[in-house]
Amino acid sequence: MGGGGQQEAPQEVTEQHFSAVYTALMSNDEPGTVLRAHVASSAEKLAELAPLRKRGPAVLAHSYEMSALSRISDYLIELGYPSTEFHTAIGLTPFDQAGAFSSFHHEIAAVVPDPDATQVTVEDVLWPGFWFGDLLFARAGVRVRAPEELIDPTVACTSTLYFTYRRQPRRTNHPAHDWGSNSRWTIAFDRFYSDDEGLHFNWDGEIDLGDDPPVNPPDKPPHPDGPLDRRRELLAHRCFVRAPMPPGEDDWYPYDGRLSLTSADWPLRPETITHPRWS
Image (cartoon, rainbow, N blue to C red; front, side, top):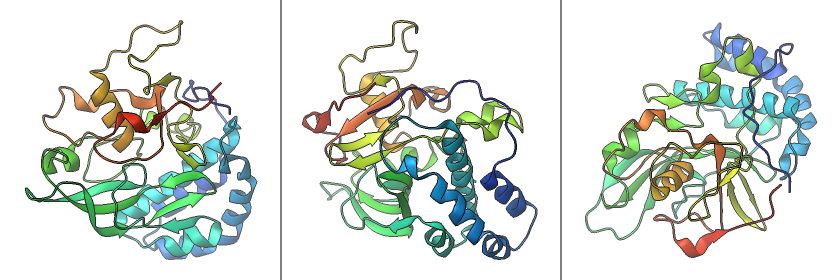
């Protein structure tokens, strides 16, 4: 299966469909009106992105469009606007994965501390997640119940949320934040997949965090971030969830790491780590 880092310096391109929809949303107080006006054209555009439905080499133009669509999703989550009708109408499949908690499927938005609990469970689904074939387009937002040694309420809900363009009032970190207004639309979508070979976190990352120690590409210096268990935690949850909060937690770089698991239980069990073919 094809991999390869996608976060090269972006190239200038003409405006994409979903970036135009995002711009229209930002300049209109009625998101429903904007979305309804773009359902047919958005469904047509999403159908063109079908190669992203399965693992394989990414066509960057497709990945750029999917990244722009994800920003629409982020904005609607931030507004508290119900987006299921629009996302389903254009070709995405909703899910909630209620019950068992999975860091792959769930974004922790709230925590109920429970010292008597022995595992993490989903208390409530706050917004749905969406699939595009095997590709995880967006995780479901959840309230979880957990003991603090597994999920620290403060850390899990206030640490920087990576792989996310916006989520006010929470801090986020996204590769597009570092680029100008034009180039930020040419940032690749971070591909997380679920298929017969497992759950694949950030499939395009060059460094396999399933290895201990991870092996850097020969042309790259040693990785500056912290211990392997914290790097895995950050990639699995897209934020930190355990205390203590690492120093400089808003300035880590998880985008070059990847991890494949047979299940996304928390805490991560070493026996779930797998190493599918990547090139």
